[in-house]
Length: 125
Image (tube, rainbow, N blue to C red):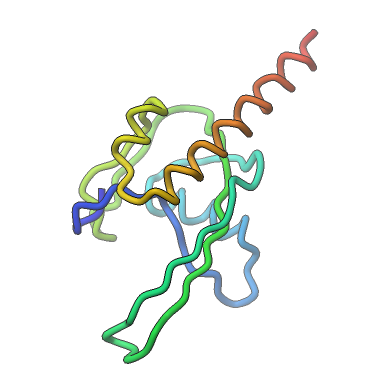
């Protein structure tokens, strides 16, 4: 949860010709202390806002990735304005998330995760 009381997911700005998947992995590790592996693209969102500090409208596009981690350890990044966080059952995560587009991303990620798990079972058979 952010210091504004919003339940959000880790995201970051792509700079210096970095790739979106690299930034996503770095931000998840930096904001939550989670070492993860990307299993697919969960979707894209966009939001526009007026930036007081920049003095103009800003449009942010975000590419979201479904990820898996070896364990459920995490660290809340208080120095980046987060107050709480963690792993939650899907229904609880959907109830916690503040913004509807984020909820849709979680639903898409669940579909990718189910396919990922099924592939693992198929390979073991």
